[in-house]
Every structure is written in structure tokens, then in C-alpha cells.
Length: 320
Image 1 (cartoon, helix red, strand yellow):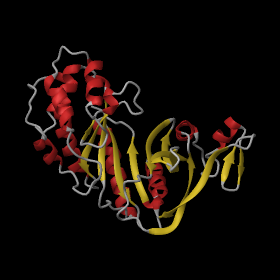
Image 2 (image 1 turned 90 degrees about the vertical axis):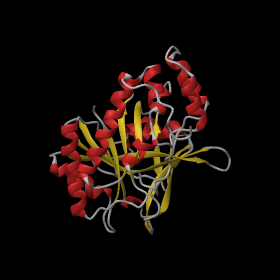
Image 3 (image 1 turned 60 degrees about the vertical axis):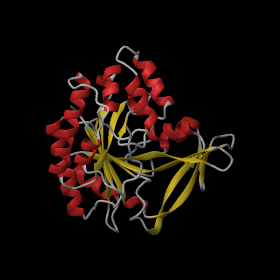
Image 4 (image 1 turned 90 degrees about the horizontal axis):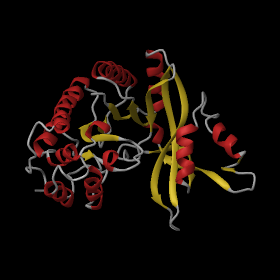
């Protein structure tokens, strides 16, 4: 199965995620482009959305994106105050998504050009506004060394190509002095489409066991992990394979299915997910390629069983 990985790393002082991106581009004969990553930071005091756009770099070979290098706001323990990073903020999720999707350029200074062109916007000190004077984006400074945080988002690869890419990234990161942050993790994304059935969905919830989790050796300091909520397990256990997929998906959502668990299924159950994937979040961040590939083999075996329904549904799961 093809899998896309998100590997959380930390650059040494004096370097940034851009250094690793340029090294990867050189290794694979690619090029770098500069853009932004959208992070939802909750809500402002008056109820408006707080959308933050941090600097991102991606590596392309031809027209294909090999990897993207972004900030991860969950990495905080090893990040100290420094010169800070200039970011952009908006209270409109639609604008943030537009910037993330369309604003890529050969230089960082030119990255917002497509956005300004769409709105015929003016860039004045500290903000970008439309011709009527309405603010679209406002600049802000994060007073921490956020550019040192480097989440490497690898494009989905089959196993052979993934090993090559992961080996190159980890080798280059090691040479540059990158390390694993104390709360770091690896997230593995698999195409959700093959699991779009009631039986497969029930298996994914009920067969995710303590034993499998422990074999993956998740980082105990990693944030936003944990078991499925008890009501989610109850709904999956009390349903049957004759139930329509959409009905089960809705019931699991109402029961409290969420992203911040070991196995994130929102990309499977939501009608219009931003990422239509099954995300395994319980892998520790490491520069040991063989260890990561061995853990992925365990996940592959689990997903094959759930997809084919080759094992009976078990209720011996955490929380039951």
C-alpha cells in the first residue's frame, strides 16, 4: 500500500527547515518553492477564527511534489525564544485555505503574489488589504524559533520508493544536525477509499488493540494521542455489517470520533474531508529508517485484515 509520512524533526540552532528542503532538492535533482501552511489556532476573544499562515517550503521534481517542509505547532518543548518568525494571520478560514493551496513561488518574497493578484490587493506595512481598504491578511511575529521546527511531509509512495526517500531525508537530516523533538511523532497516511464499507470501518475501530499500539512504541510525550472514546467503541460494537456506511459514519461522529487519537478516521467518515486518508498517529519520531519501516509493516498487516475482513471483529480493545 502507498503511504504518505509526516516526520517531525528539529533543526539545530542557526539552521531551519529550508536547509533540509534544499538538501533534499539537490539530492533528487529537484527545485524548491516557497509557500505557506495553514494552522487553525482556535478563536479570537470576539469569536472570529484565528488562522495562522506559517512559512513552508516544498521540493518538486518536474511537476511532482516529493516533500513539503512545514511548522508543527505541537512542537514546543525544545523551541526557545529567538529572533522570531514573521507569519500572516486572518480571521477567514477560506482565505487561509486559498493561500495554502495557491501561493507557491520560486522565492519567499513572491509567494503571496497570486493572492494579491486575485484581490487586486495592496501590500502596506503590516497587512494586505483589498482596494476598498478591507484587511485580508495581517502580519505578526512569533517570538520563538519556529523556523527550526521541521515537519517533513512526504508524498504517498509505494514501499520501495518510500524507503529510498525516507533514507535520503533521514541521512541528510542527520548530516545537517537535525534531531528528534522530545514530543515528536510520525504520522502515516493511507488512502481511505479502499476502506469505505461498514465492515471495514467497524474493523478499524474494534481491531485497533493495545497490543498493536504497544508494538508501535508511541512516544509517551507526544500530544494528541489516545484510544477511541468509549461511546465510539460502543457504537461500532453494537452495529452490524448490514448498516449503511453513511449511517455508521454519522453515528460514530456523533459518538465523539475525533482526530486526536492513535488512529484518526475522520478522513474516512467525513463527507468532504480535507485529507481523505486513514491516519495512524501512534508512531514515534525517529531517524532510524529500518525501525520506521518495520512499524509500517505492522500497520500494513492490520489494514489488510480490516480491509478484507479476514479476522473476526474483536472487542478486546482499550476502553472495553
